Length: 394
Ligand SMILES: [Zn+2]
Image (cartoon, rainbow, N blue to C red):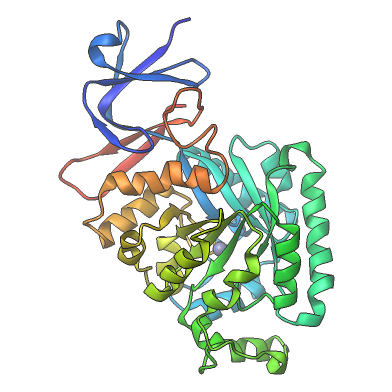
């Protein structure tokens, strides 16, 4: 059987960048066969400009919010952002559907192979059932009032059951708590029981107010809950950071994706490391830099996460807080703001780390034999920080 043979200026394998003279061999189906030195590759090697990489993994998105592109004001802070989402998220079904179809197509064209997608509804099912992208669905639950935990869980269960009716989503759907400030301890406990051995995700320390709320300090959530007619008198601050207040409530979860981490502190990172030290629990820190700039005009402490060898992955968040669904754009934003971080490392966050976090590492994330990770060509100028573009070859 004849193999496709690609060479380029560089090949990123999912782990490292190989410089020239290497050839990627693959079957016409896209299945990886090998990477060999040019001399051993034989005839018909096709040269491509730039760098070849495995397809990208978008570890955090909300496909169902795609119709909110260019609607929510920028840089207002998370609490005003949430209020605006609540006011604007409802739209006619056709509008929501058309926006999701466009977003799904945009992600595919931008080289995204798999998405960790937050779902409050079943809206995305139609698009996902026929998408070329692989999805892991996180059925999001939120409710801060303890007495409503059962009712909220049962509403979420209906959404989860609707997904799992389709064989395609049986092993790719779990519950996800929205954020520490919207999930009661009772609801966390229900999620922890239902998600035993599962992968899940939670928005973490996206605003400073989260820590302020749990430490009993003045915070913006009081006004938000007042506006939503939620009586907070039941709530007793733990006196700890928000992360340290909820973390042990998700102890049954096999893999936890902490999303954003814009205002995470070193002691929280060390706390997580200590908590999972003698367990099999995996924790990934998902960065969505463009959304952080859009909402809070801030960026996460990437250096702290790197120094502690934390596992980092990348996400776009939704079009409500981003103007593109492109992992390349997220990498470019990071390169602009953290110019000393090696590209090789960021590409690993965007490929193999993401595939592992979402449980797709058997097929995606690297050029290992037998995988079908998608093949991307990144065009770049060696003298510029910004990577120019990405083309999907397969
Ligand atoms: Zn999000």
